[in-house]
Length: 236
Image (cartoon, rainbow, N blue to C red):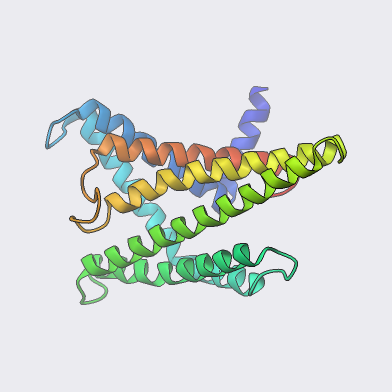
């Protein structure tokens, strides 16, 4: 059992997406722990300060690695196009808009990073705000897509109850579970995205570090669980 767990961890760390999930979870976990230990202190020192510093470094690491994600996202966007013709029109529309928001997110974040690094002479604040806004928009569109799919799945389950094979019903229930987990994960990320927007918008800037870490950890663990479930079923 321990050998299987170690093998799974090694396999995850050897792939870019798997490593990103682990680094994300570790970063938010450090922020959660550091924020909780720091309490209301304005300038955490000692262990809390170290944990928050590690979290910031891991976040910066992920930002740098995302400099190379544009082409992978472009390939996915081109592959999806306007979506399969047999797919629900609303789901297709939301998916296309999500892809557009995601595609625009990367160059905006790159400019913000380059401005902070001194590579470009530009104010980074507006670019960070724009990239965060695009991320929030993508999450909102993804939420709408998942809610639409969830509604359709629940209707199919009611219509086919007692009529379809147990295997088909089991597959649809697994899809329902996946969409519910995606909704929870997206809501957690959306909460953080709004927090990182410029002050004055909803609860922007109002979260303490531990709450940001909590939402991020929840989202990260759901992502790891879904990736693991997908690999076991041969989906990923």
